[in-house]
Amino acid sequence: MIEVTGQINDVRRRVGEREMEAGTARAVVISQTYAAPVEDVWDAVTSPERIPRWFLPVSGDLRAGGRYQLEGNAGGTVERCDPPKSFFATWEFAGQTSWIEVRLTPEEGGRTRFELEHITHVDDHWEQFGPGAVGVGWDMGLLGLSLHLSTGKDVPADLGPEWQASDEARAFMTGCAEGWYAADAASGTPQAEARARTDRTIAAYTGSVE
Image 1 (cartoon, one colour):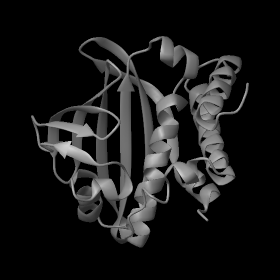
Image 2: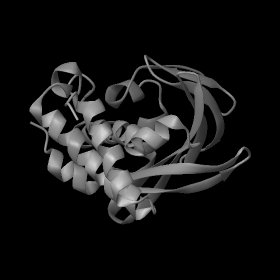
Image 3: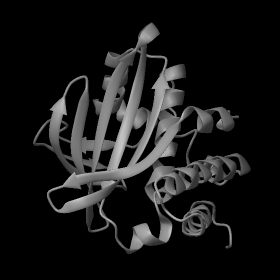
């Protein structure tokens, strides 16, 4: 059993804007503080040997200017890297390009605040599903990272298809989507619109019928 309620509540979520060369984009920001030193968290999120232990198998050249590919998911180019503080990369998936930035901040007691910003331009997918479309996926990633850092275990198998079809996983994804509803509404989206987008996101992730 995974203590999903605590994980949902430990994560902070917000939606904002970010100026890019192509214009103003929407920013989906997710963060969590881990009881691990910044060097360990940096290694977990940048090492090709450790990333598969909590997220997905990755190949490529994980350094500034290099290309990467996550198995069955996005690929892109690492555009900036400042160890052990941050990296910035393109996120290329299904013919669309967005961007991710990961920032690590040391905190008291040897803890580390992990923050990920996913930057995307508003399109039909955003209008239909809102921030939860990518946000819930990143919530799953932070769950894996949390379990890996706290236990030292390889956790992708624990969060695989069997778990994702469980009532526990559906409750987790629904709770995360509700968190993104609150962030969407707080960013200025009318509540009725944010509600409709969240309901569609929950249906997409859980297989429920609207």
